[in-house]
Length: 313
Length: 287
Image: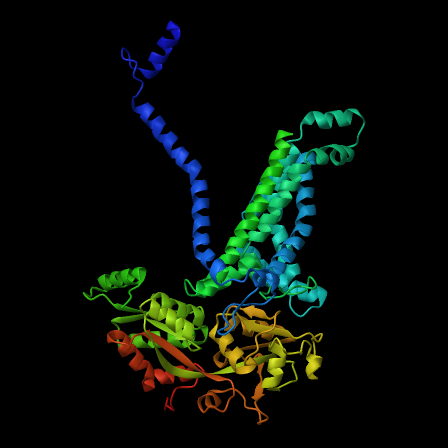
């Protein structure tokens, strides 16, 4: 006991009185306070954002909006003087079709990349690949949109002999490539979380590399991989700029991948700056915002729960 | 007058640099994409008339300009459509009093790809292509074969708060609305670019955006012979889809804004608009 006290006094360098509140103590408390603020700020911001879009949109939702029309009408014509129409069915179809196609593109790419990085690649190859994947995730979405507009558009026209290349196909491929790096990172984490003894046990039973991955590692990492896919879907729903530039921006329920569509997010981006604050059109755009917020919230929550599930189990 | 902060700061900075004592007055001017080129030309030319006044011009569409007028963030709003009653009421509720000034006329040109053999169209045919009640989805529905196009009409339109969009809807579709599936471009320039590249396409914009790589449609209404869009036909009212171009000020203009508006309506200002491909409000002699 005496030895411990001596040690403490040595550190605190405050012999005699046992008051530890010197400069270090205050700095410690200050940093603790700052870190706490940083920690809860995310919660404050999310509440703030929700209150803000709620305040702007909910008045319209309760007073003017016909919810049935909103979700079932394919006609979006909010600027009409006599009979404005606020149907987002076509916009939902646009977002869903683009996101769906993006997942079809992204899932094989990202899972393949994750399996290669996590299970096959070693040493420098592995490190280089990881850095490259992170780099791919850092490309701004407007650059992707530009690629869709200037490279993919003529390419699709040429390859498929269609009149316009700004289509579900274009935006879906672009969005798939955008979502793939994030999905790869998360999927790789999930594979890494599978204990090595599983692999060793399988190998001891005489399983080949592919059998180990297919029969043991992938099933064990199932939840994490599902979480990765869900986060990709969330990314797809929320992406704006690239989708705005590559879809052709046409209110339309697509019947093929060569149809132009318009996404929910792109509609807000294109129209919000040009509506009078407080008008019905403004309220309708904020209602789309609330809808998007709820959808992405649910997707992210699901992804989080699924990923947590694998960590516990 | 509303002074935009960074701009006024810039003006003060400029004034200090030049060594003048007076800060320049800045007029904020925003709105219609159709008018933006003219507005910029006016703003530049006005420097030689009164160098103490700077006019800051930006585009974004008639809706943007009118919204800014309602929100009280511009001095002059440019619009290629009239303010709606609802918008006027909103402006009044917020203490603004928009006053309309017609500064010129514009022919709304309908564009086709160069290879499209159809040089003439009726308003009914346009409504058939653009309107929700219209049945034309393929060029063959109109009895037209377009080389290099697999029949489907690529209908190019504008975003729904564009004045060009609103005017086209009223003049061509009447009570009907646009059909779904139109490609809504975010500016007249984008419409022109897309129609130039796409054999199947049809689009519309202000006459001033027309290029040599496009074909302009001669339009006939009510069985009359067709009229091609031009500055003359827009000015004399013979072209069926010509529209007035407006500038809105907050209340009757005063001071620097009045001087600017008066100059726009003068022969000098009207010659600038006619050089940009729009019809002046009255016949003017320009050199």
